[in-house]
Length: 441
Image 1 (cartoon, rainbow, N blue to C red):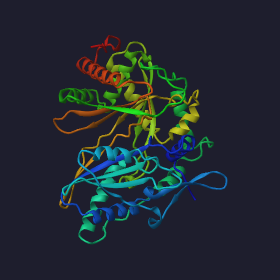
Image 2 (image 1 turned 30 degrees about the horizontal axis):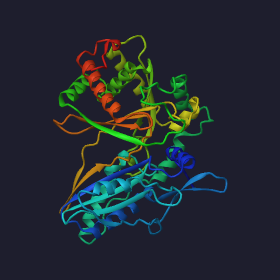
Image 3 (image 1 turned 60 degrees about the vertical axis):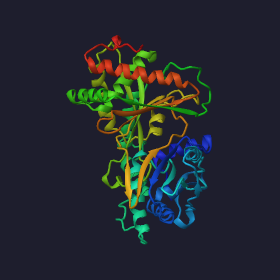
Image 4 (image 1 turned 120 degrees about the vertical axis):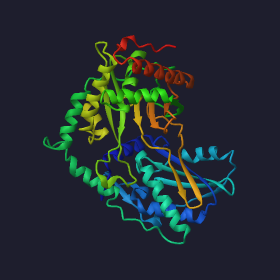
């Protein structure tokens, strides 16, 4: 009996508490241009599900109520690929509907594929995964394996790929062996939890954001999305400042976000969550699975520091966090033990995510495939700022996912404008005081 990984345990708890939901779905599409072989595509989807056990894993409970992973054989997984005729003008709405599928983690595999045929030369493959089976870093190996399998199936054979060195269940056992028992004071887990307890105890909760309406006692999880692009010159300025300060572009952007929140009235003690990939071993690089963990940056803006001082403080906290990145977030919450509320996320309510993944296109024989993320119209946090490199000369792409319980779209659009305004000021004068930064237009 293979236990759940620490990351899966948190999703298992949420699933038990809230029931099936689309909140933790990862929906993507492959826009397929060219003469598609549908039978080969369906076979290749099954090949990928066979290759990655996480995509055919259920959650189950033993007689004592302890959850564990149940990996289904492929012939029991029920990996069908519905084939639906759809017009080019209606396919996005159809994809949005399948993206909101609420997975029953105990009764169905956490992966669904649907093929929409728009014309002889245009098709859309919608892939929806639950977060318990995959993360953002999984998209690369997933689509590359799919392309490899499609090429083989199109030629009438099976994919000839190297066997994966490990499966997700191997990682789960390795994780527990590495971290040990938190009740053992000499274990790695105990040491990391002690660091987070010292770092986060006493952080103000919740963050006093400039919301449009009072926070409900129980969030609906309904979310909106505002996308934007930093101008190439702004992105260049961020990179230049990171180079001259021996930091990184994500650290600069996260520092800008901390300054923005401070100037909007959130105080001098600002906690921001961030995902970290968690793939600390090369053997995990080609695996589809849920490895990402969450850590919390407690930004110190006391004493009216300069932006350079804020950036240095953020860098110090980030580097220390990297050394303690294996402590599972749910155990971290238990260790810090903040005052709990169903109204807000524990320890932080604003997320900063950096996804340095290029826009992915693949050639699958006569078919060209373009990977796109699909919004779920849900919100895990009050605000979720995400950034990713768009490409040379195109600036930096970003988005803000927001909780509709708290914010109107216009307010979030204004927030994005203020973020850019703050960024331009601190990049132009990083030695200036945070208290002098103007967030108003």
